[in-house]
Length: 148
Image (cartoon, rainbow, N blue to C red):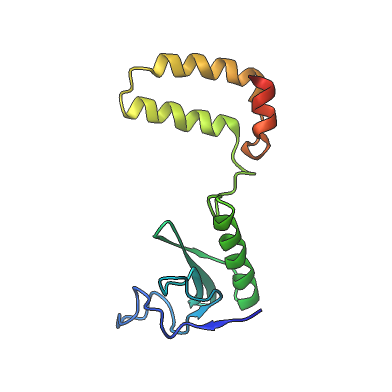
């Protein structure tokens, strides 16, 4: 695996005197993109390594929960692959249930005062017949097609 020195990378926390955000020493695991921007980097924050990456121009950072650089590098490569595949990086769809999605959907309708809340509730009743108890990761195109 080739690591790219991140001396050309300007971290938003660089230059802060408190040092509370992270220790210096960014290591980029991806070469700069066509505009000279890199996809991601790793850095230490306390004893743990963190990763930083970009998706659609928005910066994301998350802890690797490890003090081993190799773990952080693997995690960053995984996030980069997810982005390349068009997935939302770091979201553990395998842990999210259908019921949690329904709860969030209905809460959004209530908070935003959507007039179609009753229609959404009716749709949920029909969807629950097939998808109740399932994890979102298992609700794929084939299952939706069978439902339709």
